[in-house]
Image (cartoon, one colour):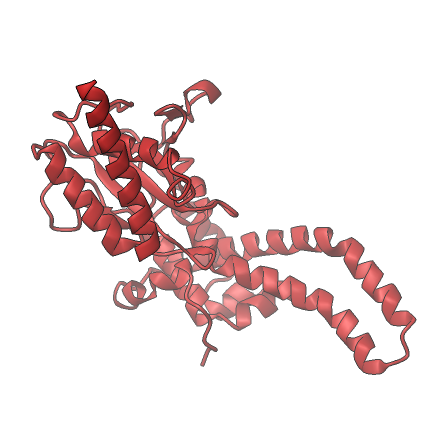
Length: 330
């Protein structure tokens, strides 16, 4: 039985993986990529900790107390394992593991089953780990599995530096090859709010043609003008007519006003499953009035974020509308 650890993004797909069994090739390919990524992380962490490791070892030679010596020497190994365990919460969201839903599910299942064994295997450089973790996953099968899952998501070329944002630089223009890293960027502050749209969109948007896009740009501008709301969200957009979103992203509804907002919430340094507006099964918001769309957006934000965050965004948007009305009268 594996020990309990806080559930990160890898664990979020485990319930699905239990009913949708990944293929043997997907499991083998996932194991190969996970161990490669974690091995690379271990090497980078060793390099960054090399100086402190030497300092601690030198200090240990000058200390007589055996218990203190052991603590100084073990601290380096504890730091290495901690780095591996932290990355295990995010590794299934890396570009190398989101090429297909089967691969993503296989990664989640592997992390869940091998939560204790995997860090030890990486620290010990256990080349036979995948063969033990996934029956039949020898080196030959691993190569065949890797070839079977080399497909990548559709993506336009990343926009040039001067064209990679709209709405006065507040909204990032994302493509299939950049959205995953942008959403799950290490150290990024705030939740990630992405508008999925079909065809070109830029601020200001036509509210009659696409009320969701118009309100999305208005929210970004309003939050930027509020000290309380500004750090809460990062804003991006993705044209799904030419780019594939990450595999866990709900598709936008079809029909008029097909834009959809998808929110990846950050929780204790990790990302929760994305939530979307309109929600699954809900009709698209095209053809609705500005007030109806605004009311629905504020309801959605209040239900998906905490009270402080939802209140700050609501206040920023409402204050922005008051200012617009006042300026229109002048």
